[in-house]
Length: 64
Image (tube, rainbow, N blue to C red; front, side, top):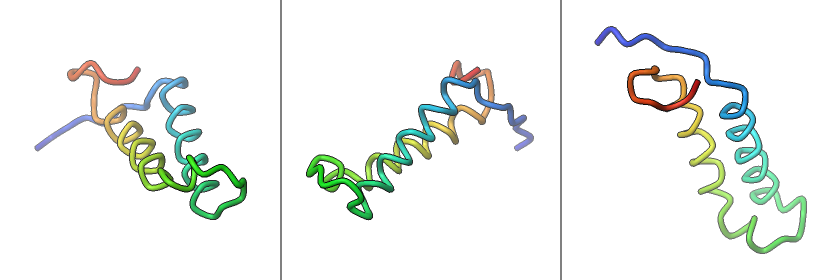
């Protein structure tokens, strides 16, 4: 289990950050948008998974 980690490309990184930020805004109800409040968990989860998968290596064709 010697997997090499790589940095995600800039687009993938910012997309993950934006999805996470949208989830946080929805969770704490900083904007009264029902869609954000309803799917806050999924915005954060997808953002984290995108970031995690994009750093797990180039062999899978994900990221960079």
